[in-house]
Length: 563
Image 1: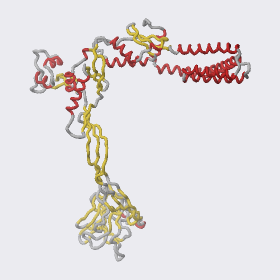
Image 2: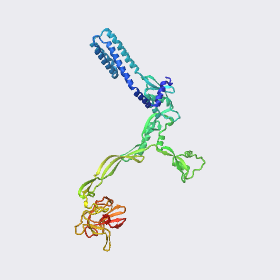
Image 3: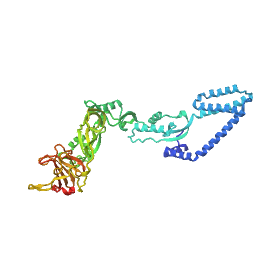
């Protein structure tokens, strides 16, 4: 082939231009449109050739045979030979002659029959030989570079693979452009095809003139530098890792990027020695940045600060030899090293971690609904956690837990939850905005107003008169709110203050010692028990001193209770 484009190569170029996906879409379209008529034609041809075959077979039938059974035997033998041809081609002739011998044993053949059998046998043999010869030829793509054929492939992917490999392993920094290729599509012998390895070697020989064998160093797939000795390059990288390692145990260091060493052909201008490679990796690539001149800076001091020469600093900023150095506040361009490699450190860290305790609630009809009582305080547990912690350039990026060992078991909190229904008699039957604050005691022992020369700023509630004692009866929250005080006072004794919002508060005093069921900050609902009636503080007997406060002023509770 002379390398000139033929009509076949033009068609191939068109198909390559549009891509295999476009070509596949066209095939699907033709398949959907013509598949049915094509299948019909093929089935018709199959029936025709089957009838023709059986007719010929009957024509050559032995004199003592039944034509139908004879045709069936020959058809089965033919199917078996075809099956063997595709599964075990080397055995097809032995199977064929086996059925011929079987036919001679079963049927009587005259000379006429034998002669007539030899003709189709010869034609069949010639047909198989033709198939064998034609199987050595197929459609191939010849590839030319500068008019010279460099190979032939059955699939363009092999050539593209070798081409990409050449691009990776050969640098065209000396303004040499990547070569152009031409193609020719045609029928070629199977021994003319070229594998991708041989094709790659021919591409190197054709296009890598002036290059030298070397080792390319790739960082995350990008060529960083090329050296003559791979062993020397590996020593530089091993030394960098060794300098980063620590004497601490359970501590590993590696590169965060993927480092590859590939042999290839490189331009002599791109080859560097190990000392320059080490300097490049330690100081990094030079990056042009701005620097603000400070008081006392000189040309030499700034150059030394950024490991530059004075000439290079002048060149970057277009400073003449006799020009004065810029004043403080001026901007200069300098070169600063940018780190190429990042180091990944994986440390094994062991830490103690607190484990929250769980809460177990136990229902009890001994408590009113909405009230709780702690039977056993919970206690957090402690776990020893071993983790692999990853750092990149000293910054923590991830942590993976490896194992967990329980040091101290968490103790669950056991809480009694009241289920006893509240007495219906106090469920706001008074008609006020508040519930009645004592369960089962509806008397007023002392009213709001002045007594003994001073203001009694609340209601003393209890059984009233000689009706009995109120000691121990449940005190409830008259409305929803937040507990702001729950403690002991010199006059009030054990007492509780609840804030209901909008400046409205209620106070419950003289409660039974150690009967408080709430704590500051706790939210309560209307009807929730908060304490029991007692006689603590300045009190003359068991009762509840109940106050209502509006923006800090104590007011008469009667309207709020509906009495």
